[in-house]
Each structure stands twice: as C-alpha cells, then as structure tokens.
Length: 498
Image (cartoon, rainbow, N blue to C red; front, side, top):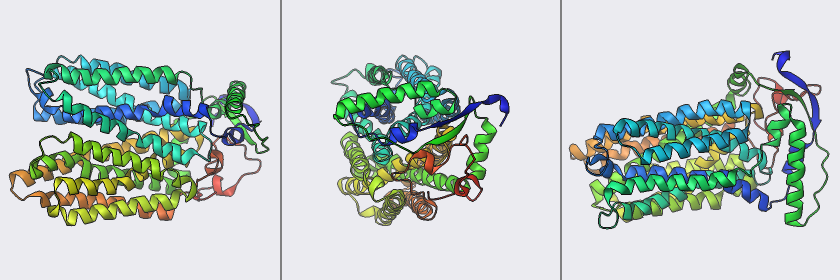
C-alpha cells in the first residue's frame, strides 16, 4: 500500500470492549434501527409479485405485458446486484453509518417514485433504483451489525435479522388479500397504496437509525480513533446504566497501521488470493440457498393455482413465510452454541434432502400438504440461508467486509433472481401447456436440492468455527501490525479455524 494513505500506528482495545458488553436495550436499538429494513424488502417483494394483474390492466395499472412484468423483475434484480457492489465498496471506504443512511434514503425515494409511476419506463427506472437501495442495504447493514453486536450474540442476531425478511413477506401476503379485492380497495389505487406504505415504514426506520453510531472498528482503522473512543465510552455508559452492572476490564489489544483508504486491488487480492477456501465456501452457500428458494418459492404460487385449484394464495404464502422466520428465530442461537460449521452443514443438507424427496413425490401432494412440507423444509433452510450472510460478513478482514457481502450477495441474487426464474418459469410453462402435470416441475426441485446439499458439504469441509470469536481473530485486519505475525492469518494457506 502507498505510504501516502498511512496515517499512523495505534494499539487499541476497542474490539475487546465491544465484544465483552452484556446484552442491553442499546443493542435492541441497533437491531431495530438496522435490521427491520428486511421486513420492508419482504413486504415489497411479496406485494409486487401479487400485483401483476393490477399492473397489467391498463385501466388500473400501467398496461404491462407479460414480458414487461418479467423485465421489471429482472431490472429490480440487476439494480440490487449493481447497488450491492457500488454501495458495498463505498461502505468500506466512507463508513457504515453514512452508507446505511444513504441506502435507506435511496430505497425510500425510489419506493415513492414507484407509487407515482405513470408509464412503464418510469416504473422500470424506479424498480431499478429500489433494487440498488436494497442491494446497498445488505452490504452496509450486515457489516455494521456484526461490528456493533458482541461476539457472543453475533450469530443469533445476524440470522434472526436476515430471517426477518419473511415477516415482511407474511405481511405482504396478507395485505394482498384486501388490496386485490375490488370490493374493498379500488384496484387503480391498491398497488400505489402498497408502495406508499413501504415508504412510510422506511421513514420511521430512518428516524430510529439516525441514533445508531458509526462502527468504532471502522473509525480506528481509518485514523479516527478519538471518535471511536468517544463512541465506545458512550456505549459503555449506556449499557452499564441499562443493565445495572459494572463492566469487566479487558486486556486484549490489537495494533493497527491506520489507513484513510484501502485500495480496491488489495481488497480483491485478499478475497481471491489470501482466502480462496473461504471464497469457495461463501460462493457455495449463496448459490445453494438462492436456487433452493427459487426452486420452491418461485413456483409455489403458480403450482397452487395451476395444479391445485387455489384462487387466493395469500394465506398459503403467509403460513410459509411465518415458518421461515420461526426457523431463523429458533435455530439462530444454535449457531452460537452448537457452532457455525455443524449448523450450516445440518440446515443445508437436511433441507436439500427434504426438497429432493418432495420432488420425487410431487404428484402426491395437495395444496395443504405441499405447504406443510414447504414449512418443514424452510424452517431449516431459512436459518442456513440467513447464516450465509453471517459467514460472508465475519470470515474476511474488516476492511473488505461490506464489499465481500456485496459480492456474494450479487452472485446469489443474480443466480436466484435471473437464472432461477428463467429456468423454473420455463418448467412451469412446459408443465401447463404441454399437459405434463405437476411432476414436470420436479427438475427444478432436484437442481435446488443438489446445490443446497453441495453447499452443506462444502461447509462441512471449509466452514469456519467463528462462534464466540472476535471478528479480528477470525480474520486479521489488513492493517494489523505484523511485528508478531500469525502464520495462520498472514500466509496464503487460508486459515479455516482460529
């Protein structure tokens, strides 16, 4: 790295002080301010998927053709991928707080624009910007949460927060019932009200989020250790006051060569050269969960309608979504106790195996039994999929954290949101027009199951035992002082356990 960007060397105990904090009301503020945006994402995605008819009708919507509806979905996915990569590198460069305020602002503004769409082009542009905001959120929020939450609780909090997407999905599914009922809501306004509601909720979250501080870990690495020290002292005072406990002293320190900026080539080299095994691990986890979800969830509504005679899918989707969130909530703590490797392997392999069995017996299900089977599969899968984001966030050096999350999120989103719908949509079309019946879509189940099982097996071999460990011990910062280098972290052998 250039000497021009180095600002000095410091020895700090900030990471140890943040990790030794007991859980308190302050931590709930972080969770609410940063984590609840996934509820908005789930709400919007579900509502958009259910509003196709209203948007397609030129009298109530924008006169979108079937191609336009598919294009809007692809535009949203493209925006999410590009936004994740764009805002991800900015998050590592300019700080967590600046970007998690900006990305939520982008999402909110784009959602309002969507509600006021007057032409298909307007709608497409608004969907792209909305996707960019959501993609940036995944990078900024996951990195900030992991750096503010104590190591003891990091796994369960991350899994639960990422799983909260399904709270929004359940809410969105239930909202579509009155919004799609012309006797209750004028169809010309129903879809616009849905987007407007999302914007109102986002503004509420933005107000809470303003009280969440910048990551002290990011500050001390970027030459702003005085600000980091002030923030940590304020957090300690709040936590001590809220819990009524004196905080224990710490002795663990880390020495850092501070940098104002970290060059992008160094970040790329770190991910692909210093940690190739962890790169393979994250790639396998993200692609596996993306295809698993699309294999079942993307075909779920059409399966109920086309093959099982269901006319109102909202209740079924809501039940399915609730099971996803309960799975993340119930199984999340086990990632901190039983451990990351065992839980990733178990949730991925078991859910993949159950989906494989479902595909083999697909023609024996009713709408109710298929929903019950989906609830069982994704009770397991949602925890594993949420833990994929946790893994990408904690197994790479701090300076690369947001960009790494963005990179793997973009891969998973592109695979699941572009390749997945193309493949599974074709299977459904062939099953309906070709008269082959429901068993024709089983191929999608087999592909999703195989990739999920592979992801679980990769986790068993390459998984990182990160439970209860500080982020700095899982992956030493690039700027860490090398006076006493640890060969497990600083060579190209890619450490897998610490």
